[in-house]
Every structure is written in C-alpha cells, then in structure tokens.
Image (tube, rainbow, N blue to C red):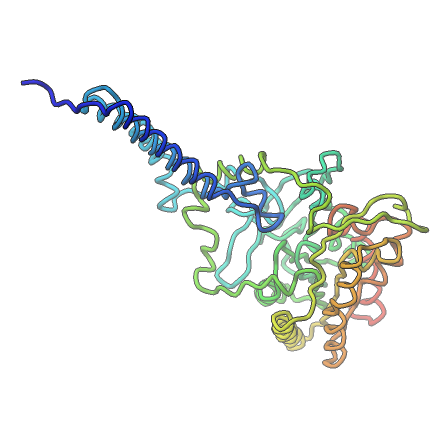
Length: 448
C-alpha cells in the first residue's frame, strides 16, 4: 500500500499563499509597533518600538506562520512534513516548558537573576512587598552601581557622567548601616530620603545623625507614596521609640504615588509575565536596544545657568511635567494626603513624638533665579501651588513644617544641590537638608 501523500499545491497558488501569509505577518508587525507613552516606558520597548509582551507574541506568530507554510507548501509527503514540524516545535516548546514551568507555578522569579540591582527596580532582588501596604529592599542588601542622571538616560546623553554609589541596608530592608532597635529620629520619605544616586556616607540620615550626635533611622524607599509612608511609620518607625519623626513630601510626584490596592498587595508585581525568563530576557534586550531621543524631548526642559553660581555656564535639565497643577483630581489627592499626614501626626502625638513635615521642592523652583526657564515651565511653577497649599493647611492645623526651598536655594551658589541632569539632591544637597533639619530640631530642643 502506498504511503499517504498530498498533492503539492500548484506553484501559482503556493506563491499567492506565501504572499498572503507574508503580508499578514508584516501587517502584524506594523500594526503593533508603538511609541512609548512615557520616557520610562522606552526601557521596556524592544528596539524602542514593541512592548515586551507584544514582541514575544509577534515572534511566536511569525514562527507559527513559517511552520504553517512549511507544512502546507512543502513537496514532501504529509507524514514527513508533520514529523519534521512536530520535532521542530518540540525542540522549542520542551526547553521552554522546562525553563518557564517553575516561573508559571511561582517557584522561581527570573527577575532575581536578570533585573539589575537599583533603587526603584522590580523583582525580589529589588523589592519585597508586605501585606501591610509597604515594601522594602531585601534584608541586609548590599550593592553598588553607577547610573546616568534620569534626564541624561532619557535623552541618550552617552557623554554624561555616571553617578557611582554604594548601598547598604539593614535587616528590615531600609538604608541603614546597622540594624536598629531604637532611634532618636526617624525619617520617612521616597527616593530623596533613600538617597538615589548618592553614596551611603552622604545621604541625609547619615549626615543628620552626625550633626545631632544621635541615632537616625532612614525609612525612605523609592516610589513610596503617602499610604506606604504611613504604613511604614506605624509598623516600623514608631516601634523604634523616636523623639522626632520627619516626614518628607516631594512636591513633584508624591500626590501621584498612591497605591491603595489592598487586595493582593503581598503578591503585587508577581504575575507570570513578571517572573517569566523569556519576558525578562526581552526586557534586558529592550534596555540595550532602546532608541535614544534628542534634546527636544517634550518631557524634558533645559536651561543654561547664569549668574553668581558655581555651575554658571552649564546646562541644567528639568522635568516639564512638574509640579502638578491644581485640578479636581489633584485637589482630591491633596485632601487624601492631608488626611494621611493628619493621621501620622496623631499617631506621633499619642506616643509623645514630635512630628515635622518637610517639603521638598522640585529643582526648577530652586534654580529659577539662575535659569532662563522655558515659559511653559515658568508658568507651571506659578500655577503649581500644591506646596503652598500644604503649608497653609499645616499652619492652620498646628503641624510643624519645614520648607526646604529657601535653604537649598541659599546654598546653590556654593555648590550643586541637585544634579544637573537628574531631579534628585546631590550629596551636598543632602548635607544642606541635614543641616536644616538639625537646626529646626535644635531650636525647639526636641532632643535631650
């Protein structure tokens, strides 16, 4: 009996089939190409065009189309075609199942091996989530890196300096040199307090401790928002029995950094897509193949510094999207913020702890006297009066407030208090803030 065979398609039909399938594949790649919606998204777009998940689906669809053409269009008999196709597919799917199976059931998270150690990074090597609505770095974490400023990274300024820093954390995953069972002062805040791109010895908590001759606990974490800060104050800060709590509010984004998703908080960011070996590998590829933008990026403004300032003649870069302009949404978030801060103050008062709200200004506000800011950004500084509203609210409610705008601006002629190409304080900026907080505490005799 003759083996089963399928008559090969006629050449004309076969060519048409190839053209149709090829056209569909090309259409898929064209239609799914996209521009990142924000600067940070560029780092998870493969070749700066395709979101990682979409790129993976496109590759799979392209492979399936090729395999289909082989099975349908080959001149070999059908049994041989199916055997070859099955072996080929198995050679891909079986190793993939072995690698991805543990990630699928949650036994392994490949971010621990593929995601770089950095502040604000994702994955268990960077961030551990607690069910009580806060997160922290792994206990006793240690790492060093050298990063471009955020604006420099967005604009692809390869000649820009990298800022080297070492990072050391305590058993609770916060940036303290030693495990603390008590502290005279507790600092709560986001990346400014944690010390983004600043080496350990120069961060505000270390310098404040030296100035006061007292133990200072740093409970800052990059991307913390007010709900996270309240949780960490209640569960970690107040049990240290401090005399003073300093809550840092950054006017640039703290109103946006709300994450109230109680359900599933402890497993936040731990879906299969997050843990996957393939997708995390593609995220690495996306980072290294990102397309660099030019200096006309709408999210970034720049201005040359002039006048009696140490960086005169240098170009400084600013975020165009800050500070937030009051709107229905923003004012609602402001109401929520004041409610949370009021609750934090009450918790402190109940334990006889002094509470200080420190307002961190955006860089453009500090450097406005020495920079010819673009009109849109200059107007935004006037309209974005969230920090002034908070100051008025604090005064009306008897909350101690320290506005850091004036001390930072007064110190700017002596040295850079913010990085030229990043939104954060330099080591000198941390020093200025530490001196300001120390002076505020000393003047009121809050410490023995």
